[in-house]
Image: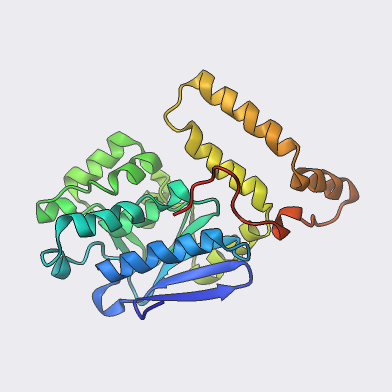
Length: 264
């Protein structure tokens, strides 16, 4: 791992720190590539139960590195951006954004691509690409999924910047915390202690039913639920509940991937 991205393991939580504070953690090619590779590796590592994305300094991520973009072939940076802004669609582990300060353009898209967004009271969000004569093409899907298409279009058209309370009201942010790193780690550790097989099945289910009609989604839900009923984790969860003790998940000892699972 290079200087632009730092890995900070804490038990079963892996905190990945965007480390270009002098550039407001702008997404250059090297950082994008490192981040895609690091998240993919963590997704395959059975010792990792939850992944946290954070930014060094006073900014989470200011979006695309404008100083670099004109020097790269569009398809080169486009390919890595496509992988970066669709990370959650291929993950079987929770991905949390720890947003302190601005998350603008691609930074807002990166946050929207996470399963949970935690924000400081000083956090700011915005799809500001329109100010550069651009549209947030690659991050738009994640923003639409988080906020709804109409609201995502509004933000893309206006390029306005908004605070954490409005972001929470929109559904982009789940919690605003005074001590953001501490609270984010508490949430991440709680998720990392949950059943890996249940989380894996649930996140895969979310992706499988996306775009399906109501009846087909229901059939998929029944199939997946019946599969989960047969897992050792579900049997252990029931037993632990009856015995009023903390579960010891059998899937913690198993490989983190399952047949047919997509990995970054």
